[in-house]
Length: 268
Image 1 (spheres, rainbow, N blue to C red):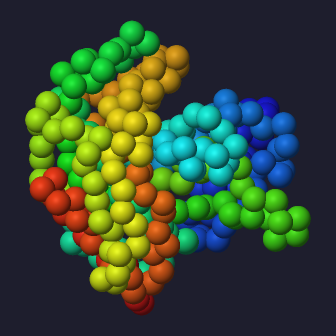
Image 2 (tube, rainbow, N blue to C red):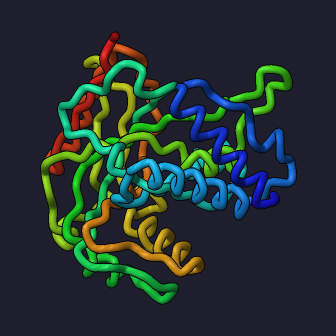
């Protein structure tokens, strides 16, 4: 994609979020779009938000489960950028009209104590650089159509990455844990919507260990001269399928001894 095409695609996504009216598939308008192009669109989109006053607070990792990778015919995760206006306290209510087609996922969040950067970063480095881990929910949204209404073509990884990896919100639990004291592979959650269990899962669903997701992100960012900063939050990837969050719904994610996270969506 040309620089002008990248800027135009980012402008479409930005307008879609502001108006809550989805735009068409970027992969359909630009069949030659590569994953690098998609990340360039994402960067341009985030730059627009920063220019409007938003601040970067961290990163998210997506498509970490084998099932989601197979659904999009890929073999690698993706990533997006967390901004301060995406943060909701546990127990909060999302105003009606804030999102277009929100969905909710359960994740383990890492909060960084020290910076982390480089292609030679190891698992031990991730553990040493982490201040604490916490239960969390990610709110997904899609500013691009999930499928083209005329052709039926579904969105692909290039559409999702361009759309900041479908990033929309983060809800952090208040329980904090020392990473060295817990085996994240066995941290699980029971996720209820309106009091009914919709999904359950274990941290092992994230690349066999959520720490692996953090390693992947650090190594990927290092290719572009970036890294994680002290104080940033990193969502390590969902270990459940996304659950639709219609107006009036409420979510309770019970992580057992690891903590709880709750979020509701206003009905009007």
